[in-house]
Image (cartoon, rainbow, N blue to C red; front, top):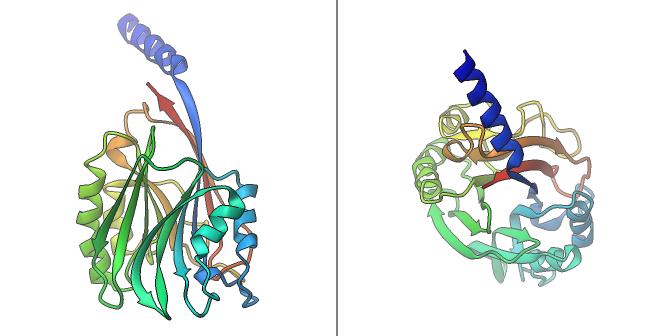
Length: 251
């Protein structure tokens, strides 16, 4: 009993001695920048990120110099307003330009990786950005159950490459309790609870946007100090933004 008590005190003291870095994350499907009012206004999306003090944002459904967005590079437009670096991963050619996913970050990524994922209705992608203390992946998964399931081994294999905490964010097109979500739970800790509804923006009733941490980098109590999530109220897309505030222990 004495040894156990001494161990507990020593372990608690070691955790207290570690520094905690607070990381603010956002996952946001922006519907090519159009709000439920039909207006494309990237300044509105940038305000969401500034208001949440977001460090890294995973953005889905981005237009780059397409006709429908007036030839704008949407990710860079939002990044300029939010004072964040833009990292784009195009997945298809569309209306004279490109369309895909991206990451906005206060600091420039140390490295960037683009990994193709299955998608029969359109090509899909896993965009991975490495930062000093953690790694963030952004994705927008297929509407097809089989393609989402086939994506999971690819995602897990990428997460296993990193010794740093590995976050994945995005529109997974899958709800809590569904088969893909249940399989993903074996490998990832979902930070947002299933009652955080994100879609549709005017009256959210399902949760398909998620923030998760790869379990091998989340277990043992030595990585996470705290975390909490919340859904924004802004109707500047057909999805609402999902925010997370995470405390990471640093060695």
